[in-house]
Image (tube, rainbow over all chains, first blue to last red; front, side, top):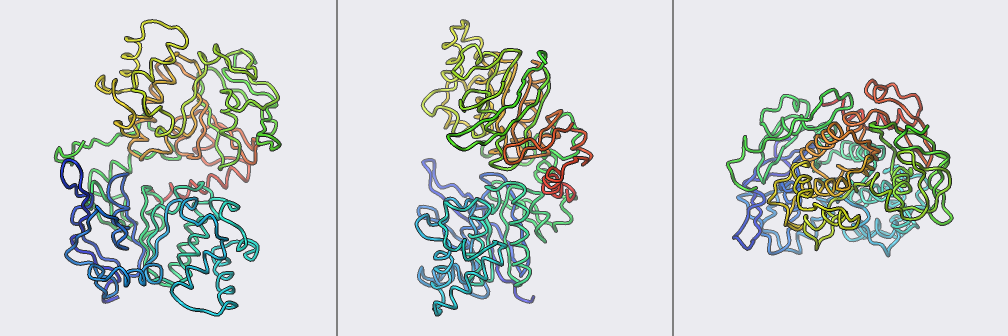
Length: 281
Length: 250
């Protein structure tokens, strides 16, 4: 892998507020090859904003600036909105948090998945249908032809999320951004959904950015981890080295999590004063 | 079993024609912390709702602190048993200040000395007095959950029903709330019945757990069985593996 799939240098996302502009992402840089990268942080750390800005999905008045932001040699910052639309879905796609809000309630599942494909590639109807059913099968939905005819409210949360994944992967993108893909799901279903993402991503040699607040989950499914705190990357490490994390924030997060075999009487609480410079609350 | 804090016998709860909880019986001892775990739709929250009176269509026996629960709203019951909800963003009235919210149960029950009681309660849940006249939107998620817990404790109940009290919170904030719940239970000798799907949280806070599936209790086990991974039913083990795998890599 000589050239990375995604190169980001000095990404800043700014929102204006009554008290002047606030940087929610503060000049972060990272590169991504065809690998699985996890971005972890708490609410407000800027992890979702980072994911969205790659697809240029930050709405006004939010502002995205970067020294360099390239995807497979294409400069994302200079693309027109139209060119950007061709890229979204076809080459980079995104799985959102909650299937309840991201699926169209008045279209059947099959139509929605087909739409994702047809937008980027014209196909004969028969082939289209086959592709949709094959994709549903790939995300381990039993009886795909029945499910294709259902509406989103007729499927469970875990199934809805698998449908989202099917929709996002059917145009065969090079990069998948999954923003908290399983936090709306049950523990027992979480693992299934992530296994599916993992299989498809490694099988097709795609890049994956998994955004989550769950350190354990990310360390299980990713090769590399970025830990974000208040808009900055505080730690980068290999997933297997997470337990050797250096930064007090990362260590605090790991320690604050209850374990299955819990014998501590009290959980250590993050002492935010140890690394913040008095900024924020 | 009159000494049990919560006593459920052959409890069956339905919403209209759908029965969501089938013939559930268990006891929670005085001062014990008991967890109900299971996936969504397993009926665990419905049990809490039936106990608190939010799901009135049930049959069987529910008694709390030795007193049988009727099907209608019960003011005296509110003094022994209170509920804390999952989402602190949804469970606090957006146009009432913390002070109003905490004083309201006292006003309803005609209890005096409200000013000092509110002050004491804020201190007990670890909130600074300056938060007393703020609105929920001026507080963070963790602070709101503290207010929700404070509100539940205003009438000095013996039993707290906790419905996923930390699942809407960040890990570091979750740790603070879990510590707080543990401290309150130690100091006031409360009984907890907690619903959660997070097994490590059970391991930290609870003494026993009941695994539920499709509205039935599959297994009741001590927390030691959970810690050592010795749950006996296949479904419990599956649930354990789904969240236990998470832990092995930590």
